[in-house]
Amino acid sequence: MTIKSVILSGGSGTRLWPASRESFPKQLLPLTGELSLLQETAARLKGFAAADVAPRPLIITNEEYRFIIAEQLRQIGVRAPQIVLEPVGRNTAPALTLAALAALEEGDPILLVMPADHVITDVAAFQQAIAEGARAAATGALVTFGIVPDRPETGYGYIRAGAPLDAAGSARALLEFFEKPDRDTAERYVASGEFFWNSGIFMMKAAVWLAAITHFNPEMAAACGKAFAGRTADADFIRLDAAAFEASPSDSIDYAVMERLAGAPELGQGVVVPLSAGWSDVGAWDALWAVSDKDADGNAARGEVLFEDSHNTLVHAGSRLVAAIGCEDMVVVETPDAVMVAHKNRTQDVKKIVARLKAEGRSLTQSHRKVYRPWGWYDSIDAGERFQVKRIVVNPGAKLSLQMHHHRAEHWIVVKGTAEVTNGERSFLLGENESTYIPLGNTHRLANPGKVPLEIIEVQSGSYLGEDDIVRFEDTYGRTGH
Image (tube, rainbow, N blue to C red; front, side):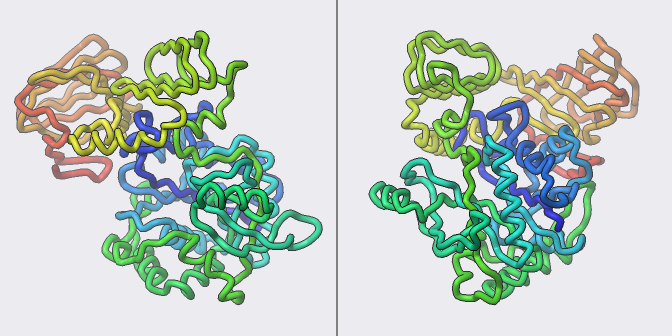
């Protein structure tokens, strides 16, 4: 019995603004420890003894996140992951269908489908539930995991479970799914003992899922099959036939298959495994406070934080010291370019701020001041009329594209490491404290030939300094053109 992790890593990155952004959503952030939520998800079966675990997880994501996902997996020792790039979002059912098609090339493993942005604080309890789910999935069942509720929550969907499947385990028959209830209904659900929160975590054999999706939604199955058959490989990435995938209907795993199993028992039994493992989907800042370690006054902190006479408050400091004085039930989130302060019971309203910023055309919802690229990252540390200053770090052995700009010139000063510079017809090396000038319109390239990160300060000057003023002639990462 082999289990293969399937990690769903989409998301818009707005619910935990300003720490998360559209180009850097919450699963890429370290919110509860040193690792990002994606890294924690990928490592969640480490030490799992109940079954063999396939060494290469399969990640379903998009173009925007591909390089930072590959880099974060490399940092935790995941080698040669399978990263499938969706050209457009089509919800979770097509994503799982692609994963099943890829997994069948390695046999017919049991797929463990996990969103990349969930928190699990009790990994041992999680692995115990997974072991029970795997036993059911091995017999052809389609398994979901129901979170044991500790309150009448109105923000989650619910699952109603039937009788235990056997006396030895906790797995129960899957009866029904329910949408987010009102308060009275949620209280009734929790009091009954029959209902669980819908976690969005699933297990089943790859072939079982494909048979089910082909039965319930043959159009989706056909579109995904055609998209996968037309795939191309690009480094760690699997690129689909875009036109074929765009033709797929959009639907969730729940709606497409799980909620309809009772009408087609020949496809496999629906099973719910109760899960009590400190789970949270971290849907807002107050949810992060709930699962974070706290001091004696109920305060949770990340970064450099000082509390004085404060209680039940979360402070997330990204770039500087934050002092909280006399705060009660507050959330404070600091980043280099934005600060958000809210009462803990109003954190869902961050979406209103995000909507206002989008309406005003502000880039603060799209990206951080620090932006990751396949070659490293840059931080826009200052800007004004006709100038911009960036700190640029290039990974060892990496290089930027051969490019030119129509509207700006650039000055490069090497702070650390050695730079290999192409400037017009010349190529040369620059060491620490050396600099060069790139005139407007000159073809140029920056590379790091060394074994330590290269750090430079770039000063741009010109009439237009947008990132879209770039023409690429050669690029290691397939980004030639504008």
